[in-house]
Figure (cartoon, rainbow, N blue to C red):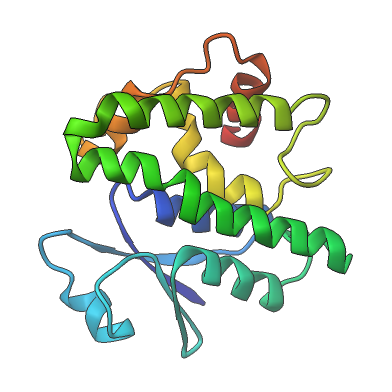
Length: 193
């Protein structure tokens, strides 16, 4: 049985739960509080979630976990088998974590740059709108690691759960909108389902 160490509202944990659901894999949830990360530190040697313990194999970092799940259970796939298509997906995942996530993280760290960085976030939504033109998913015919990686962050362009009081999610909610972006809105609905 896979044990998933998680915290409430974690977008990175949601990446993993999407992948687990897609692959039909069950996981036992071990909930931590952000104020007490001792359990996840004990298991993984670091304080961040998600972490999985898959029969003694401990993996941290959401994208590393997606890759682990793909190796453990190749069907249905999250990554293309074609090397060129897989490389494209890897480039997308790297871009999303290094480039896309920079703007909202920078707003959280330095609110004086909000206007400049909100414009960057808006431009990125236009890229997603174009990327979804004529297709249901970001990088493949079906759900892929790209959808799992982006959805937990881009869903805030459509709505935020009223109980979600995370500051980072408020930034995503305030500075993203699917208005005028029907492809993005439809994708959020599809992946959310």
